[in-house]
Image (cartoon, helix red, strand yellow):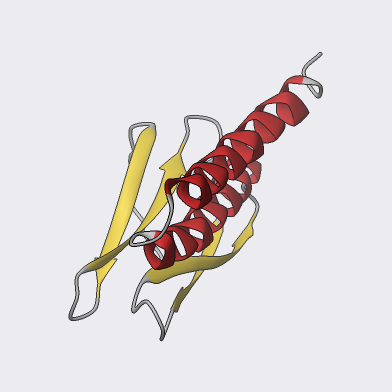
Amino acid sequence: MAFKGGEKLEAGLYFLKAGKNNTVALFLIDDSNQIFQLDLSMDTESKGLSISSVTNSKENNLFSDLSNFISGKKGEYNKLNNLDTAGQNKLTQQVRDYQQQLIENQLSKLP
């Protein structure tokens, strides 16, 4: 899918909506790089739209990794929904740890 136009898009969080269930894939637009490729796929189990690969956008690659990680944990969380609170808390902490690791990793790359 390609979007073309004479003017740059405003920087921000964008989404694509598709399918019978109106599933959504989120992606970022920034001021400096508006030429990149997102490859999309439909998850047959969750029937959700996801970004399977990103080309030429470090920000979208990181954002996609985080979104996919959280989506995977959401499935685990839903299975535990009727189980113990300790299991739910463990998954919540795993997501927080992943987010913190991602932040620290990117901060270490700043000049």
